[in-house]
Every structure is written in structure tokens, then in C-alpha cells.
Image 1: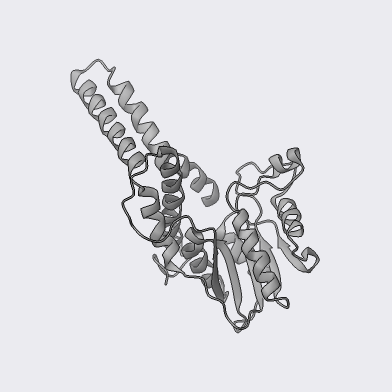
Image 2: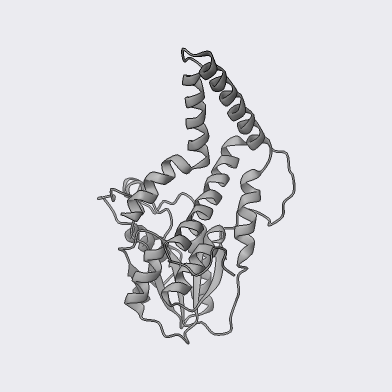
Length: 264
């Protein structure tokens, strides 16, 4: 139930969607019969328009992403027992239609995972990720896309364990732990997008894993420079990624899935 609720919540809580809905609400109020409502609607439309302009000019999304990406720098331990890659945004239906693995953003996780698999040839290799859709795609599962992509970049998929039931990061941690039963002394590299690493590290630790961050796909340089670059679409996209993680950190802490709101 919490999985479905989180999806519904995000429809309205996503920064781009929220601003668009506020703009629509203001437009309707501006046409109301009462002058007070019309005035409020006009002010709301003006405020949202100014926000869109400011977001388009300033890299607000990058400023929100930087603390997430800076929180867990990648580490390269001398000994590694296993490597886990978290499923991301594999596109089963498009992959089936196009005859090749298709991703929206998470392809960089695969490159990092492949490099680590070569660096630690004796490590156990694990993919965890079912589908994040409320109505799962019936054509091809995400694990099939992942298997094809990993094989294509030279990862020995015959050595891998594929967990294909989990629907979110918490289930990634719990269900893969159930399958692998890692010992407390084992060291596991956790491969996911850099901005997703704080929540991932916290929830995997809570599930019993001894994980070390192996961040992939940085979106920022880690600084807070005020670069002027009018790119509303990109800035809203970055804001959406960051907001999703901050909401996730708060929700996971409230539900007891992690031990800290801002993990270290």
C-alpha cells in the first residue's frame, strides 16, 4: 500500500507538476465570480510565473543535488566480497520494440558496475530491481533488459544473481539480503546513482548489509556556483530528482526503514 501511495503522492509533489497545478489553479481562480478570488488567482499566476523564470535562470536543481552527491564519496577497498547494482529506469517496452536495452538515465550505473566487476574478478555479482511501475510492463521485465545490457558490456551474467521482484530501494535491500544472506564481515560495493546513494546506503545498512559506496552518474560538480543558464526543462528535471530523494529520505526515516534522516 505504501508503494502505491508513494507513487500517487509523487504525481502532486513533483516540483514541475506542483508548479503546473498551481498555475492551473491560479488561472481558474482568476476567472472566478468574486473579486477577492480573482485577485488571489492573479497573484498566484504571477508568483508561479516568477518562480518558473527564476528556476529557468538559476541552477536550483543542481544546488539541491550537490549535497546528495557529496554525502558519500566513492571508496575503493582492498578486498570486496560482492558488488550490487540497483536497477534504475530500464525501459522494457521500448527495449522490446527497438531490439536493444534502453535506459532513461541509469546506463552509467552499468558502466561503473562493469568496471568494478573487472577490478574484482572474484566478487559475487548481484542485480536487484523488479519494476517501479504500478501496472508492470507485461512485454519484458527490467531484469531481461539488465541482463542484455550487462552481457553487452562484458559482464559475466552467468555468474550473477538477479533479484527481480523488488519495487523500490527498501525492497531492493531486503529481498536481495534474503537471497544472498551476506555475513556481517563481508564487504559489498553498492552501485547506484550518486544522488541516490544516501538513501540507498541507509536502507541497505538497516537491512543488514555491510556496504561501501560506489557512486555512478554524477549530475553536478559538487559546488554551488551561481551559473546563469536559462534552461527551465533541465533545471526542473534536476529539481525533480533531488526532491524525490529528499522526500524518500524523510519517508523512509518515518517508516523506520533507516536509522537516520541524513545518513553518514
